[in-house]
Length: 434
Ligand code: ADP
Ligand code: ASP
Ligand code: MG
Image 1 (cartoon, helix red, strand yellow):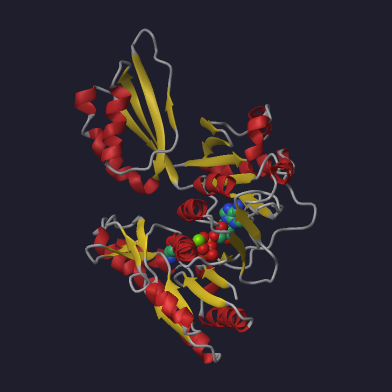
Image 2 (image 1 turned 30 degrees about the vertical axis):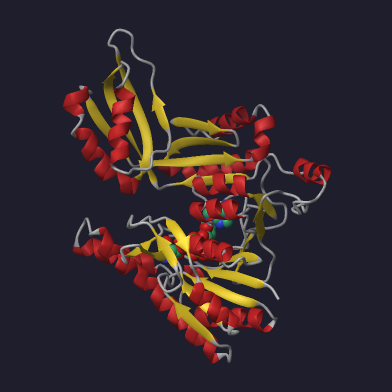
């Protein structure tokens, strides 16, 4: 008998009808002889709507209260789903993150799991019942309710799969798997059959929100096989594991592993991200210690810095500009902290630009293929798109463009690297893309 953890995202449970539809899939998995644990997200765009609501009360809601508010979304869907499954004659019980034993640190809004003790979930499964767990939430050691950051239900699912030693973690969403680009922007995107944790980490970190970054990190650490697929079709989706090939048996001969890897594509896909902004510190004295001071202060705000660029110092002035990107949400506190530093460091001014977009080309094969960046830059030139910042890792090249050029840039790069599918358009079954 297999133990399966299934996670259903918001667009799969957006209304009563969808909840009943998903309940049927869960009941079928149970009746097929599996032990089933389900993690569910809030219905549709509930989390965004709750955030909007809080914003109408106050621009800076206390983080503790915001977490209590946001976790209510998953309470609604978990209880309704348990009712729908029970209605089909299969016993089901719902649990909050706290009841399910998801223990986190106390950082509201982006808490990290510190322990997973799913006794009640195990008991429920042993009784032959389906356990439904509210995604995206946990409880701190001081008994405060926390949330795991946007997309956190994926993390809940993978963590439970690891904690329960499940055979597979299935992530059900509104597209047929992980594609070579977001199908909402690139209809010719191709479904990827297999992708490694490393590649998926880079895609997720670069904005491909089909799987949350933390969930991929967790899956890699505990070696949880993740199957990303649609709740609207029966198509096989994308398998995220340690290697590309079938030779995932750790005891398989090394030759098999190598052969599997040789067939790996050079490029996995193109990811994009609109959630970042750029801050430029203008006219910084070009002397040892200034960058350290700037980023000490920025780190103190808890902001998540991504790309950093320092221009060549203008010899006659001895001044330089330092630019970096960070999430929109981290910008107000970072700008305030830097403003307070102006007198000490003596920089001229701060510039803030929230109209940027980031595109990333990801692929483990690119490290052994020179010319990938030249081809990328050439394709953007041919599309008339200006590059504002560049950063690279072993298996990723990222560029910043104007936000309104981003979609065109993604499509141009997708085509330039021959990623377009020959067999029709990718299906987006539901969701608002919000
Ligand atoms: P859920 O509500 O199921 O958690 P999400 O909206 O978080 O769903 O993630 C699914 C969405 O991710 C898709 O509808 C798609 O628009 C977007 N997406 C971005 N990049 C990719 C990609 N490379 N492959 C598939 N989907 C992607
Ligand atoms: N409901 C949460 C969000 O919208 C968690 C999730 O769906 O994964 O971010
Ligand atoms: Mg999601």
